Length: 351
Image 1 (cartoon, rainbow, N blue to C red):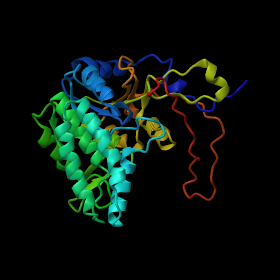
Image 2 (image 1 turned 45 degrees about the vertical axis):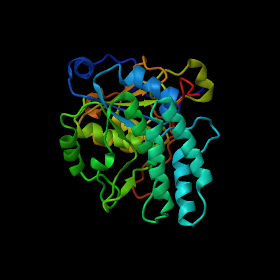
Image 3 (image 1 turned 30 degrees about the vertical axis):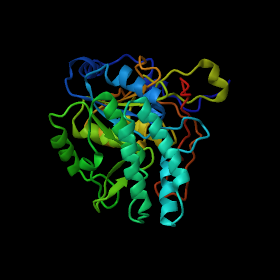
């Protein structure tokens, strides 16, 4: 009989919800009047059709989703190059004095298509002209890799009728790239009394006053920062799977894959650090520290409740079986176990 490599069942499944957990759920879903921050990934926003689905069937259906954090459009086809990498290529070519228009045409075609599909073509052309001018300067001190989020944010704000606020007004980074905590006060003050707002993810204002990016997949982190700054009731991270999944060996696949109902931030951080791409690991700490939950949701199956991630002290302590596959490294000063590998099983195709 095959042995299960890592089981979360003891902690997260087949348990009786505690009274505290039930109260948390009531507060989140019924009684709490604080806003929800919803972040949408690139796959969710890859085409005009998907953006309209997000806006019409998710964002505008719940008035509590008042702050929307958006990524750049994802790949339309698996063989496509990510738009962020195309922006980087344009910057590199411009710095070398080489022609970058062939690469920039790929960017223009995507955003003009989005503009036409969302009835904001003129805004996209204006934004693209601004980006082209900035890239053409070939500055070694400025990067434009964040422009995909910026352009997409403009398009989505026009379609939804929401406000647009640039994250450079809200998020300020220290020299080491970490968030300056004063940002939370700035977010609170700037967004106080402001509803229905689109905020691009992935970038902020650096210590030098210029636009600086967060780590790749950093829109998850942007969403967490905004969530904490507005003291939201819940952070929703919308992706292309039904939630976070247990890891089974291949010969256990016939048991099916059911997303975890609820889990702790520490376990989510462990899984994300080991390669589970459903949430960036750096998006966990800002919210765990202030006990704001996160829910992983599926854009393409919006009726599914997804996985609820809660602070550790709200999760019932139960044993987890771990096989002896985690090896100690004697050369490592902390003698911490080698990270285990996890697999996130897609429940719904994004194509």
